Image 1 (cartoon, rainbow, N blue to C red):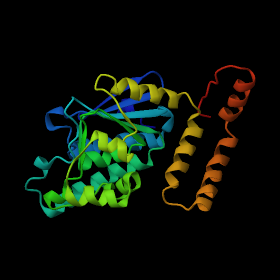
Image 2: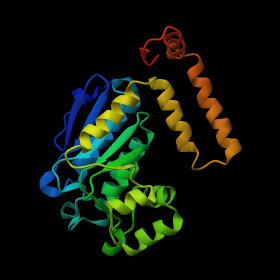
Image 3: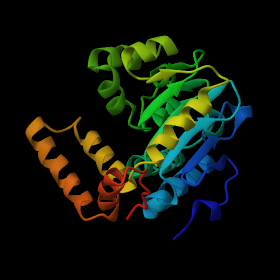
Image 4: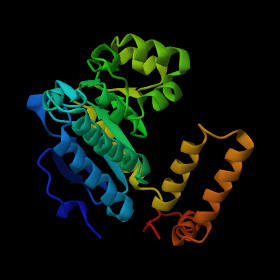
Amino acid sequence: MTRVEDLKFDNLAITRSGDHVLVVTLNRPDFANAFNSAMGSEMLALWSALYRDPKQCRCVILTGSGDRAFCAGADLKERNGMSDDAFRQQHALFEQMIRAMMDCPIPIIGAINGAAYAGGLEIALNTDFLYAVPKARFAFTEVTLGIMPGASGTQHLPRAIGVRRAKEVILSGKPFNAEQAEAWGLVNRLCSPETLMSEALETAEAIAANAPIAIQQANKSVNAAASLDVKNGYDFEIACYQRVIDTEDRLEGIWAFNEKRKPEFRGT
């Protein structure tokens, strides 16, 4: 299996916090961390590697380099002069990148350190939840440039903030601020720039301390809630629940509780 440490990244910075938390930083600060084809390929490789071997970590934090932007979206300078065919091929790469991120079974926390515009907001929406600094700003600017969101933005934003508000954001192209994002339920918590990563790490470590298979199955079940009615959603939940019954971690949780000690989960 391909481990993350074996991959060569020029546009992502990968570090670990402790044994189980992976910190992924979009690392093109001179370009507001806009993603080009090279970064798209690197993110596709990253999420695919974690899909193939989810035991590599138990939680991921995704952030941006610098203090100006999380991600400004696709690199429009790279797209300048692209033929329609080249544009379609590049977008197909970005579609694969987003699908691989969606399929990643490991929880992803977005630590939004600055502006998240267009495709950058779409990447943020594909995390499981967001912490952000007060100066962060968000926007879907695609329609102001003759295109539209194409990395799941029209699907995730309505689920996060409601259909009518999402239409206003997407169709106007107007930005909104961090306080609005928190009030609308898009952002879970506002953090100072000095504490953003420490607060994200604290939550990531709490997640990583829990049983990995149970976390993955619970996350999958919550994700299904948006597209299923309650009864079919409950059927899905029970299918996920059945997956954890045969795990050693389930037994360890019961033993630890009765022995009045902290459980040592192994992801088995």
